[in-house]
Image (cartoon, rainbow, N blue to C red; front, side, top):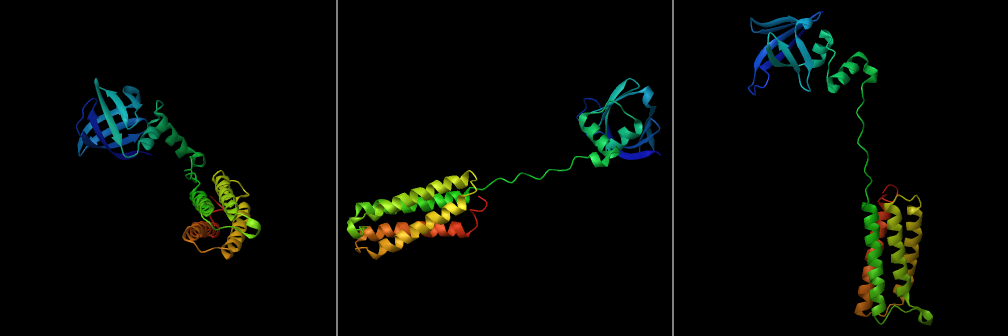
Length: 226
């Protein structure tokens, strides 16, 4: 059954647009028509034809030219062209064996570290608040216990949990809950013993901000898939 295609032909080395042609291929015979004018009519055995990355290189009647069509695979298949490019060979194989055609692969999902970054920021705020609390006159519980140690340690643990999140640790959510609950309980106890001075209030403001950010990250679901 003949194959009829639209194509374009130009002399080898010519950078011009070439000439639009109708390509007719049947039983290893190639015919090129430009409107009603016959450009060429050859059998494959009489010419040299090989596949390029885009189109075909043809040597006929002492001239060399390049032929491009709207379906190079159909032309190569009909003409039985053996010397095909790797690109065309893959398309020919896919046409004869559709099941072997490569299926497009879905792009890999790139993990996001936004949850880990958010939790690390929360921990840093708690550490900063604990540091401010140490420099103030308050933040001391019964028996002279310094609350700042609890918040510096708790904030540091939150930063450590953020690191576990960034490397995909499965225990990140459980660790975050434990550390956050401990810090919240400590905050509730410490705030009841506050002396009310400006430095102490600023320190507790940073700590509260860090805890709020940590809770927001926890409830956003980011710890399930960071």
